[in-house]
Image (tube, rainbow, N blue to C red):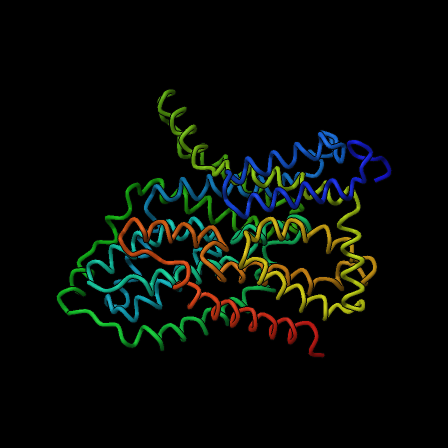
Amino acid sequence: MEHSAVFGLDPKIVSTVILLVSYLILFTEKMNRAVVALLGAVAMIFAGVLTQETAIAGIDFNTLALLIGMMIIVGIAEKSGMFQYVAVWSAKKVRASPRGLLIVLAAVTTVFSALLDNVTTVLLIVPITFEITRKLKINPYPYLILEIFASNIGGTATLIGDPPNILIGSALQLSFMDFVYELTPVVIITMVVLIAAFDLICGRRMSASEQDRQAVMQLNEKEAITDRRLLHKSLTVLSVVIIGFISAEHLHIANGTIAVAGAAVLLLLYTFGDRHDEREHKVEEAFGLVDWTTIFFFAGLFAIVYGLEESGVLALMGHKFIEITDGSIQKAAMIVVWLSAFVSTAIDNIPFVATMIPMIKSMETSLGGREAMMPVWWALSLGACFGGNGSLIAASANVIVAGMAQREGHPIHFMRFLIWSIPVMLISVLIATIYLHIRWFAN
């Protein structure tokens, strides 16, 4: 950027200060994160680093559309009770065995996190977990801990499972199937290892009386379905949207457009035939299901990071990173996967990934282009998503489960969680590192 910022200061310095102050406040959690991001974005404009036009140009509306569309679809679908049905049905399939339940709830959490998102998944699964463990008279703690880990690892498998993947996929115009092909294998391997470890440490020692197991077996999963017509409508739309994601690269339609189209169709089906006042109420209620705090947080964050990009800071960081790695793609991938994991353990992985994307993009020309750099992009996704298991504050799903556990009288303490989370994070990132090496660099 040629011109100076406010008071004739170097835009690189001004944009860096705004970013660091914004991230510091986010880390302290003293203010709402959407407010912090919006203030940071406005500061970039007032400081002269960006104009209103360039700030808006820096917002990735495809990401926002994808988030909003999926939030509406999942929120309406949840009203049918389909997800609770699957959880109860799965518990009965293992005859309410505490050991079998540990495995099946982890598997269900993993799959739901890949197809929905990890925050929505834990909001659906955790109440069912409490209900079943209460009837079995067993400690829910191991189940909750494993569900946290499964939600973050499962969310890594697809484009829509975790916000870092949505950011990376939108920035690189990657398809749903790109993520499935590249990341689902390592997610499956990691979950098999994790479930086996939990079964060895906890599962084999769990037991419940036959009477208590029968109490669970008497639960009627069909009672979870509160609206059969809505169930059929939701399943149809959700299936078509996922097929749309899979076909997006052939249709040349952005994922955000597919998600919003699905949300609009489901809203139409959801309210079709209702009276005017009832229809309007349902639509307003559906829009209320969108986490607008997250949407505005993303919007502000995009503008802050774009300020760094426009001022040349990220290009400078990219050149320094190339020097550190000696221009080696393999070194870059290994540094990124571990750096992403450790940083994501300490802070929210979304701001970190949003900052890393334009920096890595600036390195592509020097390191052989987009195709050559793909291992680094997958390393960023794996490190940031797996790093979400590193501490209780590392991912939104972790915080939500902790809050629900506190209300149920089973608090998850920060330090006790670290005893589980640090080994899980290290082992999962080690598996990711080995996978990246075999997949991209072994030949």
